[in-house]
Image (cartoon, helix red, strand yellow):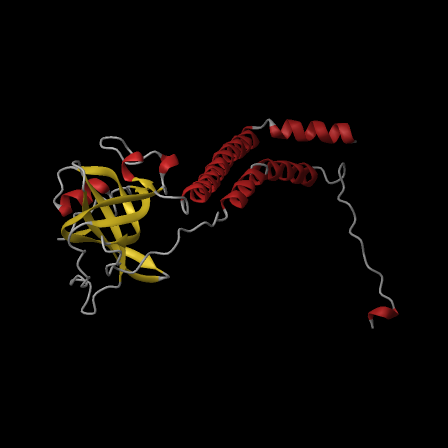
Length: 272
């Protein structure tokens, strides 16, 4: 009976309808395979980010030119490197909309810093400010940047992707270095920016600044679990095809392949 049943199932599988279903199951399996790797690569990227944070975040700061050089993009391995630079703030701030701090909406404040040595300016993200009390159309007030020389300590960040939105005056939609440079009036700027940790004046005092941003998120998220789920889903289509063919074969030949009798529970006094 087993050989005959297997032959009937294989013959049914070779019909156009079930071959189409098998092809669809194969396509679904391929899609699940690639989606699984997509999620796993996201997990690997977050793991690598945490390794960079462990290596750089609380390390002794190094001079900015050792990490940021003109006309050379920030290497991924150098992101979050703790740096220090002395210079003077120049011009007025530019605000980055759509930011949050501890779940509260607001803006981040960008300023141009010109190092003491000749060369391009660097954009410094000085921190977070809540929105204006009179609505989103009015920019919030912010303490002016210190005048004269200031020593900045912070972390090097790669610029963000452009959101391709036309900027409002003195605002940008993301920390895209070229777009922020235009709003800040800079013609020569380093390719990354510095997220401010602290500032100090020549006399050792600390000037007022916007609210510091929180530490970077270190969570890995559910990407690894999602990857395993996608890979396990690869077999679902084939299993459905098998059970569909099996059901058809049994339904068309009930005498040859009778269904297994269902177990019936016998009532006894314990059920009362």
